[in-house]
Amino acid sequence: MRVLLVEDEPDLGTAIKWALKQEKYVVDWAQDGHEAWEYLQQQWTHYTVGIFDWMLPDIMGVELCRRLRQRQNLLPVLILTAKDRLQDKVMGLDAGADDYLVKPFEMEELLARLRALQRRSPVLPRQQLQVGPICLNYTDRTVYCQQADGRLEPVSLTNKEFQLLEYFMSHPQQIVTKDQLLSQIWEMEVEVGSNVVAAQIRLLRRKLAEKGCSDFIETLPSMGYRVHSIYAK
Ligand code: CA
Image: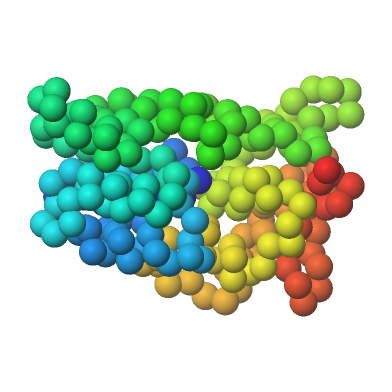
């Protein structure tokens, strides 16, 4: 799940980004509307949800939202704002926002709103992904591997391993290239070496193998990676 966070207050932006990353979201943080619009127009990055501050120094959060809807872009958007008058809320929702959170708020509430958005948005993945023996739960961000006797064995993953696995499980029939993984799973501001994808996949495979699923991700030489065809339906 990749989030575009647009917030011009450095302290709040830092706090939100940190909280989201703890929940295993991939987060790009734009500090003004122009930067955000640039990110949104880059076709190679697909966001799952947007968190836009209403009051930004240039393009307002509601305007970003309006532009997306004009282009038939259904990205679920949560607007953050200090405005809590009814007419502001109506204006935000009319601009196409899916939800609206008034500052100041507790991080727990923001995270709960994101989960709620995920539950009701037709464009977001459901609460749970199941591919073959692997089950990924969005509500508590856990992963289980089903054993031959039906038991569910928990798999403890780092944030990056979880994000990788989630990407594969959301695209179970696709061949996924290294570049695709770099642009979807790594944040824009992070410089990564060329071996990092292969190294992370190795670590993920090892953890799945420890729970009895050694062949979940297969390598297709000179093409990329894919959920093993015995599991992808
Ligand atoms: Ca602001």
